[in-house]
Length: 75
Image 1 (cartoon, helix red, strand yellow):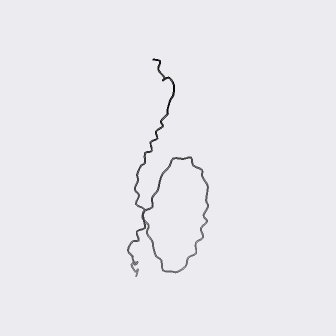
Image 2: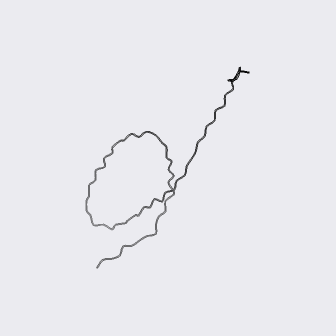
Image 3: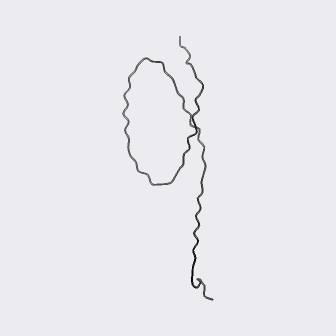
């Protein structure tokens, strides 16, 4: 006879804010070896959901110059 697992209320974590920038990319390999040992314990299954929203930022720059002397057009 198979028992149904206990399901707890979800834990909602604070929103993680992310910013995307365009830059060159350097790849650094990370190797994470895994060893599995099977042990009889009670298992809690934490289900993580990552709802994702996006926004955009438009940056505008202005430059002002004080030009002395005659203008670009002859008078």
